[in-house]
Image (cartoon, rainbow, N blue to C red; front, top):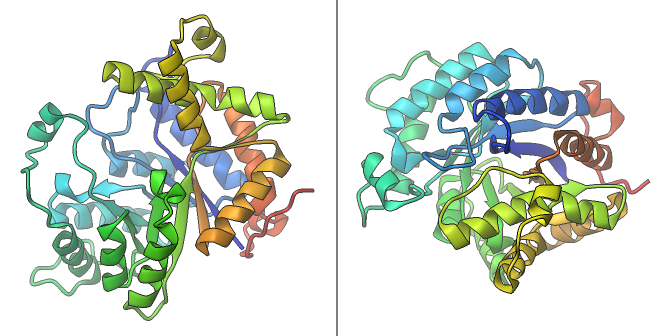
Length: 337
């Protein structure tokens, strides 16, 4: 049984001002709340063309003010870029403004390029992720040698965005883990998850969230086209070193595409979950069975915002019962009807 949440990266779109992507994120969060999604998370990317969200705490404040029930959080805050005290203070403020609704996802991705890493004052060869999470937890829980304010009225759920060694860190600290990207297709995944469960040190028990790009349309071909703008952007970034704004399918089709570029587009599209309602339901069932995950953090993006909203709504109709959309708690299941 999969819970359902949404991750929005504030992707920019050709023909729109970059700031419009933030407005689009807020609007998507409002729709997600209406559809019964459990959480709406935003991302942190610094100086990355094509992505407008560099300060998740600021964006979450806007989203929290325009929603009322959906949980809001980060997917994630990258600890190499921040002092743990500053992260704790920001999230304690959000929790005070939006009580009972705030999550904190922590990751350790470095800057996009060497100049960005230098601008973020990141030092090569240092990995303090586990220690930084522990310090952040101490501030959030009021057990540090100094007190972060405002003092939390209730615990803020903390999640670890992880692959490889990060999964072990989540287990040792007794925290839920969020897993996405190429590792979902890795033959080592089952071994890593088994290790996470066996090494977990916490009263609540292990909890796994899988994150994947998911897009649904009426036909397989329509869904394939829906996945093209993001796949094209990823492929072009590997070719040019720049991550472009999302483009309309018609504009992409009018551009020359070499065999190598086409292979890269298809490679990225293969790593996504896309298709008709029934096809996506089958893929999610298989992924849930393989991972034993408790929740899906969907992260689909495309140029056509109306088609994206329709896809989000269709995904919610697969995993969210009508009771959840009306505000009553329920455990979601997958329905192909």
